[in-house]
Image (cartoon, rainbow, N blue to C red; front, side):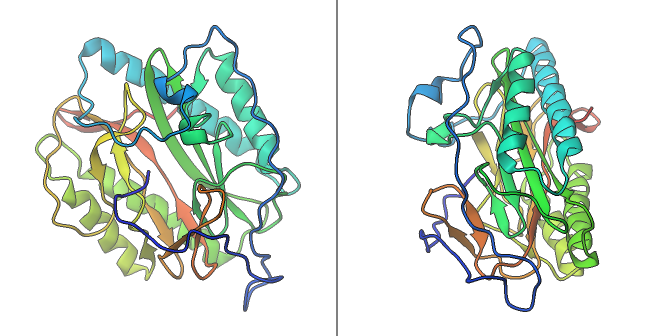
Length: 305
């Protein structure tokens, strides 16, 4: 989810050959296959037939008992789909093959893949490889030994969205990449641990930023967590860096936390597809995300198996 802060460089960003001081190839766009069909009987979100992103809906997602059960169901399915996608990660698979498998599992469970048709997004899952910060479009790219890849799954089930992501290792990954992924996941769980009714949202950003600083990683500021439930993206905007924002968590509220950390520059460059976002210097980026429900005792993670 894009923060309201603007960033420059809306042009495709390509290095020639391999990245400086690295054996890793730079990320390049591949061939995108046609959109996959969804059976007519599966309910669609209202934005599907519009090519314009609906943006962030005003007002928080706060649920009654029935709504909470629906959120638990969509969150559980999203977690199961993500877990399945993770088992597919290996050298030689294409990101389009991952999309195909994710798409099929979601529709087999009577749900709609939320990214498909959101603002014109052409695929059912986001696959963000190596220096891709977020919103990578699945295509003909072949995953190679040593890559890392974030899989971002959102499902729309019975009128409610469940949203989650994780970063996976492709084969034998070096220590530098493994540590980035480890710390990014720690940032997410540290932030979840402080969530409870009445807690200020700005404490999420401070918690994440403090832990990232200890390990000398950058925190991407332009992409944020968000309310989620009956709509894909709603208030509040969850900043992952230190900030003076207002607002407090309330009982039975659902939202995501999804920190994105980098080894190098935190500045994003967007490709000409208007979705794929990569680090300015080609350095690695990792992300983890959960959908949370605020309870009397803290936060329940809805997107876990």
